[in-house]
Image 1 (cartoon, rainbow, N blue to C red):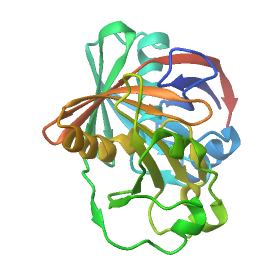
Image 2 (cartoon, rainbow, N blue to C red):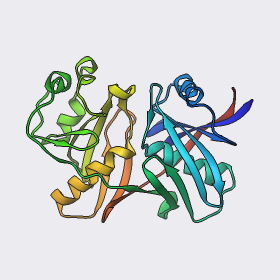
Image 3 (tube, one colour):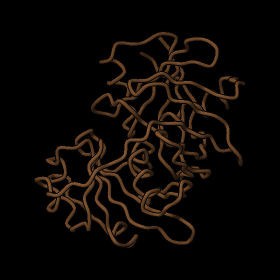
Length: 263
């Protein structure tokens, strides 16, 4: 069976930057093992699969090369981009139904797309989990626990300079480890995302990390609208808003590849 596939660079307006995601629209769900195998073959941080419900509604699932995940921001943005740019979707809003509930995507100013995700604020953590300090090779000022472990540093330079040891970080019993610090030059905060436990040593730009980061930085900075930058080697920008118990994240996306796979 031939299936369409797209590769999209998300959270960037420039090809070869941001976070690449594969997107596979499906007429009906494939077995989970098959979707996992496709994601492993793609060897990208995430591959998104979606099936139309009708109208503006779709079901969506995401796989890393190793596991299925319950929430992914950049591959959701990439899926919406494919619908708008390549599959003729003309509605003002897309609703993706997922393990994390309904996720809405709409067009925003400047050609961006806006994701509407649930906020998951972190809480302070008093002790360093096993493997963290050896893994980061640095000591954060503050630890916060949410779906991921958030490590707060003083400066952007410290976050950029991290050279983590994944053999230790994989022992940290959280989905991933996020390093974050105040930004500069109009950027409110920066981050990096390390997820060896889910098969992603470093993710270039991670939308789902920001449902935890945005509540923290909104409270710390006293503002609801935030410009975030993930300072991986590929880098990417997110324009975020904390709106009650939701986090809005806007970003650009660029198509890199269109083709077919044989399953």
